[in-house]
Image (cartoon, rainbow, N blue to C red):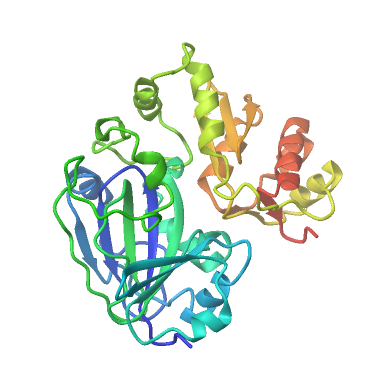
Length: 360
């Protein structure tokens, strides 16, 4: 139905204004960006100016076909929008979409937008891996758009940094001037991103920005300088920095779609977790889960998983860091004899944050 339509993958990160365009070739994607200088990007482009990267991967394979995206947009639990340009102007239809409606669309002037596709399609979730030089807590989701000829959402601005990856087809992009509170806007009900309504009441100077962002060893760590900046920004900030860190970690790690239930049908027992570890069963992180940690003393961390906080001491701090740093791993068999580690892993399994291969 949509086989020849252009498709774009948009990795959004919390904050404002940087666009990095990646035009990929038509083979299979590798996990590393080709000849990409992370430090130079953060120094010269991040939140400073746009960057176009041509053919950033040696090989590329589109991780999602247009027809598959259309099918996903028809699902009840998936957030989607259909935006059409008519004689009356821009019109938007919230999902779930209907197959007959999508099948009857014309040859031009419409765009289908589907949010958080990385939560549902593992190969789309893999697209985040090359951008892990941005801390995990700054990453929102991967939105995928499908457009007909002359389709779009119109000139607009939002408060996100976005990496745009061109998949199928061709698309024309224009970058306009910087916008501020005095920029003329066309009134609309819901055309912009769902966060626009929350952000429009916040002065531009109060938005979180980190143009001096530097690379870090573990993308799962919420760095002290980021916490300090957020702390200063919060008008009703808590007097205790540690309490603020706990609150922010829990708040920031809350799932984008909290109504989605990823818990296993049958609860996982601690003894099963011990057996998985002893048997070297691979462990995978749920792409929809948000994991992060904050240092809490010499060798302790506050570990956040989908809105919950776990105080991890010396026995489990390294485990928490590992879970934040890697999407898939095989755990050290020594953990099978550590009750604190087994308890943490069992809770995470039953929350649906992680799963062992072979788990029902």
